[in-house]
Every structure is written in C-alpha cells, then in structure tokens.
Image (tube, rainbow, N blue to C red):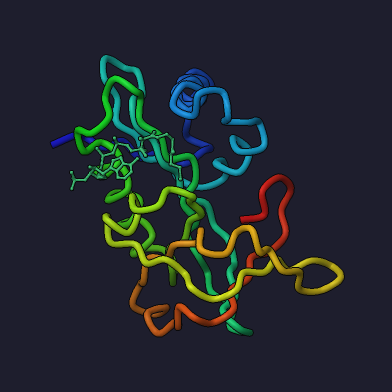
Amino acid sequence: MSVVISRSTAELTPSEAARIRTLLDGAFEGRFTDALWGQALGGVHFFVEEDGVPISHASVVPRVLAVRDREINTGYVEAVGTRHSDRRQGLARSVLAAARRHIEDTYELGALHSVLPTFYEHLGWERWRGPTFVRTDSGLERTRTDDGCIHIWRVEAGAAVDLDDPISCEWRPGFVW
Ligand SMILES: CC(C)(COP(=O)(O)OP(=O)(O)OC[C@H]1O[C@@H](n2cnc3c(N)ncnc32)[C@H](O)[C@@H]1OP(=O)(O)O)[C@@H](O)C(=O)NCCC(=O)NCCS
C-alpha cells in the first residue's frame, strides 16, 4: 500500500514543487505546459514518493461548475501522472483515491477532463454525456471538443446531477476544461 502525501500548494517547498513539475514533464513526455502547471496549483496535491522523489501525482483545485443553472462547488482534478518506470502498480489509483476522499470531504462534486478512453471509468468516475460550455463575459460558449471528456465523481449533495444535462465551467486562461 503506497503512502500518499498531501500538501496544499502553499505548503509545498520550492524544491517539492520543482520535483513534482519534473515528474509531470516526464510523465507527459514534454506535453505538460506552464499553463497546465498553473492550472494544477491553488488547491491540494496528492503524491507518492520514492527516496524523496515524487513518482505519482494528482491535484485537486476549486472550481465552480454549473449543471443547467445550478452552480456546484467542485473539486477539479488536474495533473495526474505516474513516472514511466512505476506504471501499472496502482500508484495513480492510490493518489486518485486520496484526491477523491478530499473531494468528498470538501466539495459537492468531483470533476476532471481526460481524453483517456477507459482509465477513469475503470476507477468509478462517470463520463458526462451532455453538452459542455464555458461561461464567459459574453455568455455561454460551446466547448464541443471537450464533449465526452468530462468525468464526474458524485458527492452526496451533488449526487442528483443528470449526466445528460448541459454542464459549464468558468473561463480560465489556458484550457478552460
Ligand atoms: C494514466 C496514468 C496516470 C496511470 O498511472 P498508473 O500509476 O500506471 O495507474 P495505476 O497503476 O494506478 O492504474 C489503475 C488502473 O487503471 C488501469 N490503467 C492504467 N493505465 C491505464 C491507461 N493508460 N488506460 C486505461 N487503463 C489504465 C490499470 O490497469 C489499473 O487497473 P487495475 O487496478 O484494475 O489493474 C499514467 O499512465 C500516466 O502518467 N500517463 C501519462 C499522463 C496522463 O495521460 N495522465 C492522465 C491525464 S488525464
């Protein structure tokens, strides 16, 4: 059983933050941009270390999603990655379980964006079926390319959401979802 460390972004030392970034740069093979890193900050990080080096990570940041007109305080999962040499040993499963417990203690709903076809559903997340939107200063804009990529984790208060309803996120720089 892996020991999962949890730290808010504010609690991370600069070297811990740098080591997590290095892990993610490797896990995403150069596709982990500064924008993605920025979106992974401002919440709580969950990670497993080996000899002081993070080898698997996920973070949960606060967002407000809206299902139809109902705003829902959401823990949004970002920056999920495991070092190549340590994959398929249940590490991401462990950090995501810790992230999920934090979501259940803190938020009304969990959510994340992923293009992986089966990974999150295999871990119990539900794929959103309805249309996706972003809320901007000029109103709702469709985010068609994100349809089918949003996954949710039901927490008691948010349990009644209908997966076929429209869902929106607030605008943010970089990837809105
Ligand atoms: C996806 C990723 C985080 C999985 O990490 P991991 O530590 O190997 O995952 P785990 O070993 O905890 O796997 C948990 C379960 O998912 C399955 N699984 C692992 N990788 C998978 C993948 N890419 N696709 C589908 N299922 C996968 C495992 O078989 C396991 O199921 P099991 O326990 O029933 O056997 C890792 O491959 C990675 O870092 N990929 C590159 C970055 C990335 O794509 N991140 C996700 C972005 S949303």
